[in-house]
Length: 252
Image 1 (tube, rainbow, N blue to C red):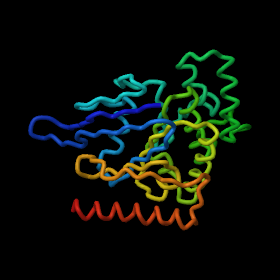
Image 2: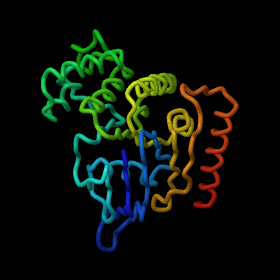
Image 3: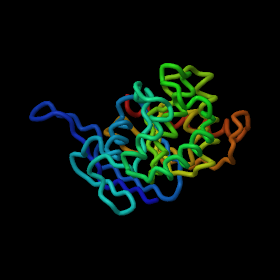
């Protein structure tokens, strides 16, 4: 996988009421990296992610996915929303099948893929339930495997664990990491949680409040599954927290 962002600029408003959220952003992601976009609120993380997804257009610049220009949403990019965004009138099974039907995948392949995904997400036995009948953790697992159902080239996630409490968040991070290791896929995730970024990421891009500038590109070289209590893990936590604090001092 090769995801390239070339000179991405995003300006909101018009005439005398313009705000530049992103300016001349360049990012190159290769292979099956898990990359987190980390930074303060308002730094343009989600705006950048939705431009990659094709949900909105950049004012200038280009997004290339495996050499193809991104101009609109497509099945080559799976997206997981913060609030799950499951269809409430569809069962777990129907939610997962939906993107495969949209992509016109043959029915036999759909059923095989469905069984694999239900097993991967430990949702067997719950496939006939509706979103209102399952827990927050099950909703999140359903949202993740739905995004993986059409076998996208890259998975995009916007604060995917932000809608659950602290303990469930940590459990879901662990479950998601395990799920992803069984279905390796490049991921770009927006988060404001330093510890979450270290636990899940191979690489962390720290974005500045100054028009989304990439202030730091940090590689996280830790074995998986990651041990939150390990000394080297804590060193990364201290290092990244320090980067954010120094960035905040310069900006305010």
